[in-house]
Length: 128
Image 1 (cartoon, rainbow, N blue to C red):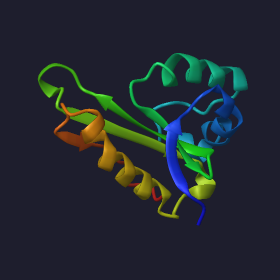
Image 2: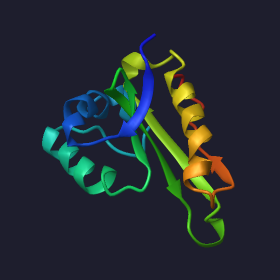
Image 3: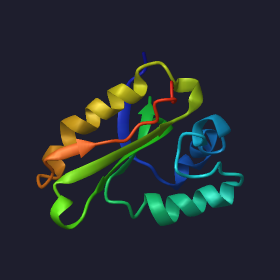
């Protein structure tokens, strides 16, 4: 299997980003609607991804096939981080997301020592 890695997602990843962001099968399980233009994807990367404190591309041999992020809560819940991820549908059911989550869990507590808990919500109908 090719090497799985995490790295910052940037504008050079726009074509790979559009593979999953423009896929109705993927967006069905996400909080965002399917992207219908490359310009909208560029805007999202510039204004949401790049300024995000912890947003990474999930890569096979350095090619982005999805993304994973951790968002910190505020105030009294600052010790809790919320994990979110998305993966291009052709990579579903291969254990890639599980491996990416384990990679994040092994590093996020070192990078963000204020975290005590990492949590994620799942859709039980998402078999990907």
